[in-house]
Figure 1 (cartoon, rainbow, N blue to C red):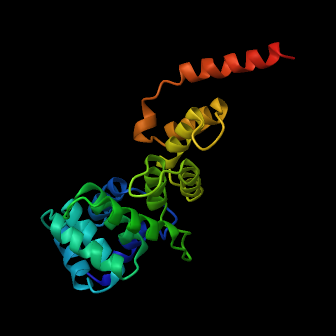
Figure 2 (figure 1 turned 45 degrees about the vertical axis):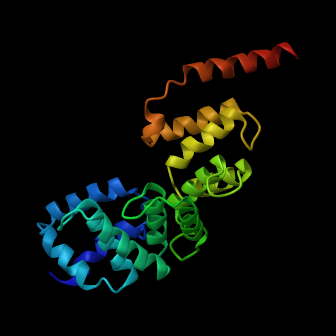
Length: 230
């Protein structure tokens, strides 16, 4: 198997093909890609392992360890290769390393270190994108709840909307919450409903089972109240 066959997997992994998939979606894609092309997972793993000295390949190798593709699941190896790639300035790996520190995968939980890696990944600009959108969404969450940093809903809103501009769907739900609660922005039920619906359409887990009937009724009552003041 030539190394070039891994390019398609690398492109979907780092988002250079224009997609913006989360880890679980990438895993599904990888499994379908392997099946469609009759590739042996162990052979793909061996090829990626051989190129592990390159940051992008090291990051992909960590992902293979994370999901046990062509190898046994191994959080410590996953962490090691994400760390190697992140320290070599790989934007995707920096976000993934932040995730490791935030959730204690392969390392002890360390919110401050997680925040620093998310910040590095979120702020990084390149030809493909202006920062990692998953890191931007995480950074918004850290600012909203004041995790490892001073609480700032204004900064949370900034990072959520930046993530949305990069097609991050999870941030749609988070912005809807801000508009509903008037956090960092004026209360706006209309915009809250709009962003909730966008999140539902994108099948965001937290939004998919939402019942918007109460918000819609609240929106209608606000409209009626506005008319009665005319």
